[in-house]
Image (cartoon, rainbow, N blue to C red; front, side, top):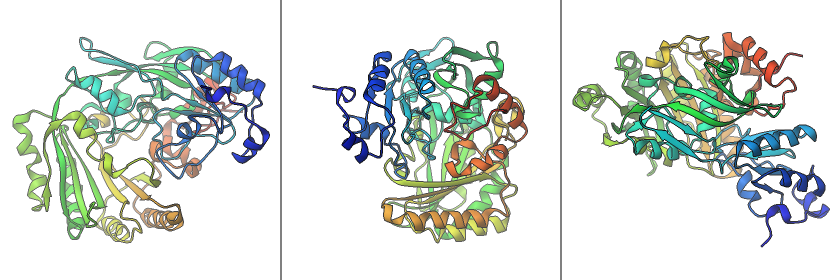
Length: 470
């Protein structure tokens, strides 16, 4: 049986898939350099490999290098440079902006790199970039350990980490980057470096929030924490209570102990009922669970109380069904200056006009351990105990794209009176490139200096790009 790389791509086939930048000689050269596969348009596995979580992303790489090792990554990066190909990097494939997929360039697919080794004595894990947080958590949970890792189990560890990394355990254990010990990185010149507090500390600083600007990480080393069970789940209220519910959480959140995380949602239930919900995760001592969550339960009563003890991996997959792969997604997000009554009224009014029942609006509260890190200590600078807004437009049919994007942009425009220019790069769309400087704030110029050192030609530019100095 032939592989995708063995199949001959005719000019007619190339034209039918939008053009092909690589001739057969170059493809065979790339294949000879890798242990992994090389996928081409029209070949086996190509369509699946170019498909990512967000169905709005429909791009066709000239070739896909399905890497299985750091050596493969280095060879593919070198190949892209030699042939002046635009280069994209796919980890778990969950990035809403779709930067993982490049048109008519070379895509590095790291989804086969899913090795993980947990050291229960040192409470660390070394993990490869193709893992999702669900896969990561299953391994660490076997040893009664966990670390901050998002709120959706299908999110890839690589992209979330490099952008900073929020999650259920952020208030207790900090952001994902606050638990990163080291990273192995293939740089633009093909070197494999270890970045840590002791080795290449400038690169290590930049990787903690600076995204994929500086190289391809082939291994992450994380600090782990004892955790098996949490008290978690949803408290669901009628939508009519949303204003009161958001005002309550605005006032309650700054008083919460650090082992309690709460995300607030304006959403539609699976049976079509507009609702307001708290997603709750308590990770502290069991004997204090009821007292800690009690104030949230006292706001109500809810029409459904689904909060219960559960293994931490179950908490990580709690809202997976609300953000399945294959829908069309368009996000807008920022950090609030102030969650005023007027801001709450604006959110509730616009959420009620969402054209799709699959859409949700989130209000997230950070703070805790993440806020005890200085704004210049990592590339991610926004360490104040803030509320974050995420407008998550989601719909099934491409025919509905215009209406849903227009709604999200209108809501975003209405929110400008209440949000600042501080942003989190992991939830920025590709169109937000002009906001990158604001996303990094006081750290932007230092990021430019690191970028200029490690990637002066801007090889890694399909991201929320930090442009190197001329």
